[in-house]
Image (cartoon, rainbow, N blue to C red; front, side, top):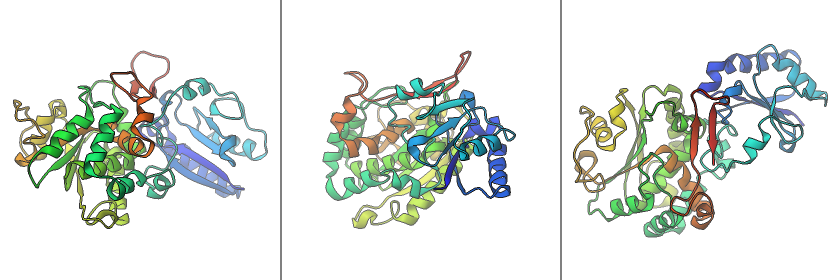
Length: 360
């Protein structure tokens, strides 16, 4: 059985030197003729100990090391291969004591379920982890009304800050009497110290895309936009690759899963204006206008992009959708609070000991 070595190559890891570690791993296994598969992943949430490297032969006997350097990684690989893994700098492990085992195990990862686990630019990895099964279920087995009811029953609220019930927002867009509708993902994350959306887009772009396609089908939209701030170049790159892959596989485009449902998805880069995180300013920016908020009503579900009914959801909100459809509204509602079910991703930043992401 060959080794599997995963390296976290999200923005946080790259800033800490993960690119050099990745190159050192490739060089070491080639030089020493080690049978190993080296995979790229993204952020698992432990930004304070990047670069992170996971190594295993059997996934049930996995070790994730932190603060790995290009000088130390060779010793990590060799000692693991000999059956005597190094015990220093173990962050997460199911065979050794890891410094973050307890913290990691206390989380319920729905939004972050694939982040740091799969290769974010491999649609095959995503498919192996139930990817696009929720979309298939939605368009083949569920009516639009049933999908909206499921989202309503889950109790999920918008994760962008306002906390408006997502199912109700979808219902408004569904009820709008217009053949042309849009769905928009607000990825213009501008709050100081916030990097939840960036990490999801870098680590699991297909989950957001799948959520958008399901939402588009539910409300009757045939076109969508992901509005992402230009300061997130890696997220944009991963989204572009994911959209191309989804199109090649038939999850985007015409006659999705052999039905009469067509959906086209675009990326719009923001110009760095904080105000464009506000939904009416965001829509103005997509239209090529100056990003300025406008008075409501009319609300986007009534008159949004180019005057057409538009549904706008946050990255984190959309990343929940496929899980809810596959696992059921009741299972989702088991988490969180009575008035706001589900999990929430938090970015831990500032003058603290352990910066990173958690989902609770």
